[in-house]
Length: 110
Image: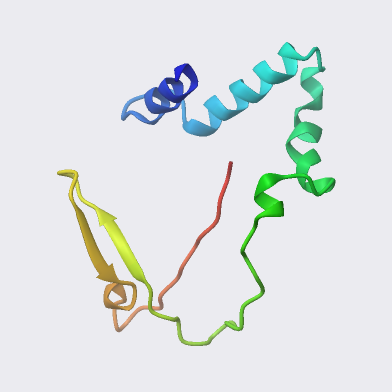
């Protein structure tokens, strides 16, 4: 709960830190707790994937798709979070402007 509060505080507008800063701090705390040199942080971050023991890799449902560069984008539903806390469901292709290419940048950093 304490760590979650740190993440929440980091994401507040005007905060001097970002969630990735909190993640780094937590990872360093774990290394210190187990008497591992802080200089090992990068190896720590990569170890699970390197050795095939990561939960995220083990249960990853991602697969090589058939979509190719330049192919039409498939339509998917998007959920927009509004400023008032409500959500709005819309189509990805409905957000595309006819005179501009649709660029999708997706990923995960955790």
